[in-house]
Length: 115
Length: 120
Image (tube, rainbow over all chains, first blue to last red; front, side, top):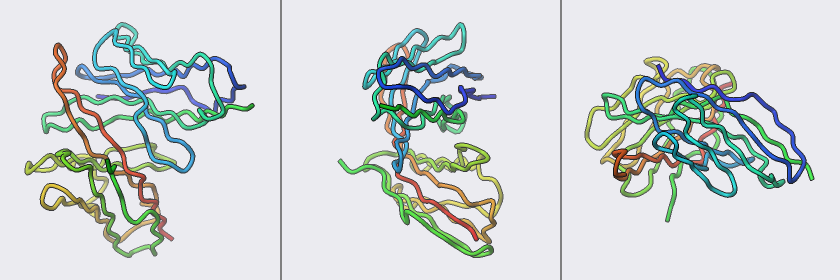
């Protein structure tokens, strides 16, 4: 089946520190991979995505590379800011026979960046 | 443009009552999903609609849960005889797709702000 395993938090970093949030997946097919972010009091927002092996998704200074050989999609940012404090979710979608591409989410990692 | 909207934003109900949650997807998106976000279970898929096709209900946790999508747009999620374990944030997402050479169709889901349901 499909599943996502994500580094448990919470993670607390000082401003300008380097961030890595690990994510590995199990999939029956050839999934697309996503990172979603949920800022305090807000809904889920798509942060970045990758659709095939070796693709690198990037947005707002965050990057993640689709590694098929290690079934991983780790999120990185070179220098975090206080405004990056949020909960980050790794997710995959794999097309079902019904046509659905429902997302399978990790448990989420809460990041707090302190000044 | 307008994003996915959901109403109400918060709902408190007594155990045993029925509730209806509403979702307005992004105009032109043919696919619509419902998810549930709860402390114990994380984010779970509930149901999927695509155009006029039969919905994929494989994620609904019990027969107290049902959903419909009228006219291919607005969707309502109904929970009958609510239980305390139904307390969660219910999220709706609508999906666009585009064709990417070498990959095929790629789907992106855009989420609404959610409805926080509390069953007392």
